Amino acid sequence: MNGALKWKLAFAFLLVFVAGLTTGGLLHSLHVRRLFLGPPHSGEVGERMREHLRRALDLTPEQAAKIAPIVDASSAKLETIRMETAQRVRNAMEESERQIAPELTPEQQKKLHEMKLHHHKILMHHGFTPPPPDSPSPSP
Image (tube, rainbow, N blue to C red):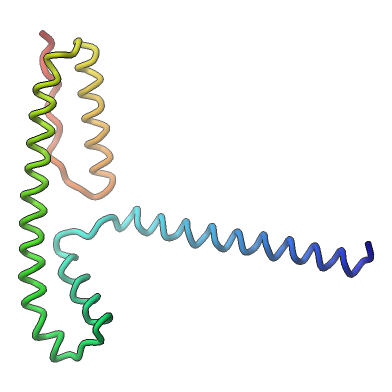
């Protein structure tokens, strides 16, 4: 193997390594961004919808002004639906926990409560504000 071929191979390996680092860095930044930004919060849905429509449809400023109240009304409706759905999910989960708890041993009830605390921490970490978990059910 001559010297020029060795340098070409070394350069090719270096190029692949740098491409891998770049790809990994980009994917990591997207993940971190999503982690910190999380899902859109209630006030952001309307703004994101408005911006998406403006860009995708190439709206004029007059068109954007005319559709703004429509987008705001839709955003408010979606927020109401989101809140109602979240409450229904919470109620269903609490009801199932109330039905499951009596069937468990005291140790299992404690584990169930710890699972609930862990789930609460995960939701808080992702930007949601669930109601605080209640105290564990008294042992029978």
